[in-house]
Each structure stands twice: as C-alpha cells, then as structure tokens.
Image (cartoon, rainbow, N blue to C red; front, side, top):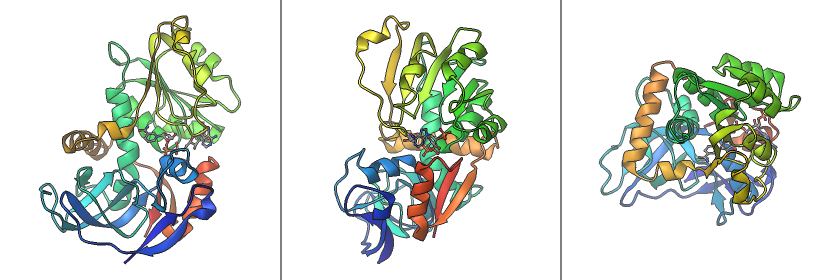
Length: 327
Ligand SMILES: NC(=O)c1ccc[n+]([C@@H]2O[C@H](COP(=O)([O-])OP(=O)(O)OC[C@H]3O[C@@H](n4cnc5c(N)ncnc54)[C@H](OP(=O)(O)O)[C@@H]3O)[C@@H](O)[C@H]2O)c1
C-alpha cells in the first residue's frame, strides 16, 4: 500500500484527498519507483480542474525522483537501486511509491539530488525543447530577442538562465516587480511587469521597433493577442500553456497582415514520445545543470499532506521558480 493524492471528480483544490492504494509489481516495460520528492506543475491544475478532462478517479502528478525498486520484463536502462527522475504520463506521481512506464524515467546523475531531480524534469525538459527545438525559420542566433511570459515561474526561471547561456536576449514578463527582479537576476536581459506596463509597447521600445523572433506564451487568454503584435515578420508564436485560460479561437487569415507569422502549440509529451528522445533531452538538461549554467531554484516545499495549499498558491500566482512536494 502507498499514500497517494487522488480526486474523484474535476474541481477545486479541496477535492485533493490522500488515499491508500495498492501498488503491484511492474509489468513488461514498467518499473516500480519509491519517490524521495515529487514535482508540482501547472498541468496538474489543468488536470484537476478539468481543462484537460481525465478519467476518474485520478491520481495526480507528472514529475518525481526516487529509487527504482523493481523493473519489469524488457527494461534494460534501469535496475533496482538506481537513482532516477522523470517527467511522464500517465499522471500519478503524487505518492510514495508507484508502478509506471519506464520509457521516460532517466537515471539521475549522482551530482543531482532528489529534490532537484523532482523539480526539474518536466520544467527543464520543457525549457529545453522550447529554446532548442521550437525556433523560428532560420533558427535563433546569439543576440536575438525572444519574449518569454511568466518568466519568474518554474519553466520561466530555467528558460531565463538557459537563454542567457545560449546568448539570447530573453525579454521576460512577470506579474510583480519582485518577480521581475528575480527573472532579471536569473538571466533575463530585460523584464516587463505585465500587470502594470503595456508589454507590447515595452517590447517595441526594447527591440528598437523590430519586435522579437519568437514569443513563448504559456499564459494564453490574457497575453495572446498582444503577443502576436510583438513578433517580427515571419516570427513564431509558440503557445505552450494556458495559465490564464485558453486563447480565443482565431482565423488563420489574421497571420498574413501581421507579418506572415507562424503559430504552433507545443507539448512536451510529443518530444518525449520515445526513450531515445527523452534521454537525449535529459542528457542536455543534466549537463546544463551540472555545468552550473542553469540552477534549479526550489522556492516552495510542501509536505504531501499540504497538497491542497500547494495548488492554491500555484493558482494564486504566489509561487516563483519550482515547487516540490516532500514525503
Ligand atoms: N506544453 C508543455 O509542454 C508545457 C510543459 C510545462 C509547462 N507548461 C506550461 O508552462 C506554464 C508554466 O508552468 P509552471 O508549472 O512552471 O508554472 P509557473 O510558471 O510556475 O506558474 C504559472 C505562472 O503563470 C502566470 N500567470 C499568468 N496569468 C495567470 C493566471 N490567471 N493564473 C495563474 N497564473 C497565471 C503566473 O506568473 P505571473 O504572476 O508572473 O504572471 C504564475 O506564477 C504553464 O502554463 C504550464 O501549463 C507547458
């Protein structure tokens, strides 16, 4: 048996309940992992509220780190006793121990502790594929401007540092002056408080009227329209979240007059669809963290029993950087 966080229906944080569930033996292609820490992500909120409809009952959580206890037939990259971390479907990481597919679980380098591993896999692999693989026509070069919304959040602070390491000029937005200062300290070249400033006007000022090559937009409804107006001709609008709600539907015809823009909606789960792609991205992330170019800030820790409060704080924009649930 293990303690796990479960919901019986979609709704508010009060529906998150700790229950006892059975944990079996891993089947073919699966492992059993005992968590030392669990990562909290905004996708957990979408799955709880029903923005992403899920079958019930649902055990939440997409990220964790711990020790492999058992491996099923056909699993060759992990063995019992290995330290490991993952971002993976299906949900279910908010627990002490679980059986899960092995494909997305990676050996954790000795230099990276469990909490850091639990905090960084989903958010770090996302920053990796956004900055390295979600690029405009012609790619990104040193000195290029990109706009990154919610820059003081979990994905955001990793992206600020990684963009700086790549020589990019990341313009980060955030909802308070304190969050802006944090994003700047962590590598954003410029910051904009989008609660008090017109971010489109500021982007044009910063870029000398040229605009940016890419907007990385995880905020959605509140930023979508203005974000498109921040792009250079042929620029890329990269949507990857909806923390303020999904953007309104739009007609492709609007993209022409705005400068023959490109639009994409990306999800990590396409990028980590295979063992090989997951490991290649994880190796890049591990090397970047080990080199010190990207530091994983864990700004909040909650015991698993306080998972309701953790969700409330994330939704209320009270958090910065990464958040872990401790066991
Ligand atoms: N598609 C993918 O592959 C993928 C993978 C990982 C994450 N994501 C997305 O990336 C985003 C960041 O994820 P995260 O886990 O690191 O979360 P986070 O950035 O730590 O938290 C979300 C942030 O969004 C901002 N925000 C703006 N409007 C908001 C609103 N109405 N309600 C709540 N927050 C609002 C807040 O920052 P300010 O106060 O500074 O505005 C808040 O702190 C999320 O949208 C998530 O869904 C997508």
